[in-house]
Image (cartoon, chains in turn green, brown):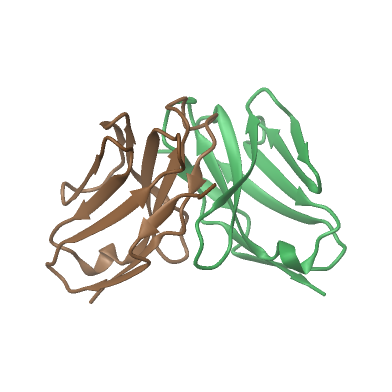
Length: 112
Length: 116
């Protein structure tokens, strides 16, 4: 079955730096990959979606890359702020018509 | 416009009991999905309903069931509760059944279920 690994459980960075979170998967390359933000006690909030034929997607300070050769997606937050502190989840959809498979998430703390 | 709403917010039950969780999707959304999120893990897919029909089911025992009503709201039922059912239960709505990958899902705040 498809397995997803997000690089670390927790990541601490200094305010103003770029945060880079990793999502690795095994087996089949997904048709779509999504990134979500989740705050404590809240539901996930959709951030970005990237398709298998796309290399990169940007939205304001966020950037997602997708490397099907490495079976990896990178999620970047530039000029990070304390308000960016949250858990970030990656989720895969194998075919475009299958339920999302979520990773465990990475808890990001941006220190002022 | 109101987002996805879920009730109750918190719930405490004992082993063997039954529980019903409720979800109201965003107005105009016809698809509702249910997820279970155990502490420290990502959400795990349980069910998807679209136009009142079950369109997908995750790897959960038959103790879990759900339904969708004509107004597109949904209920998740869990029978014979086990300690391991303690989790945050999330409901997500989407506009159409366009495939999970392309159709943005909007999550509710969840129901925190504790089984003692």
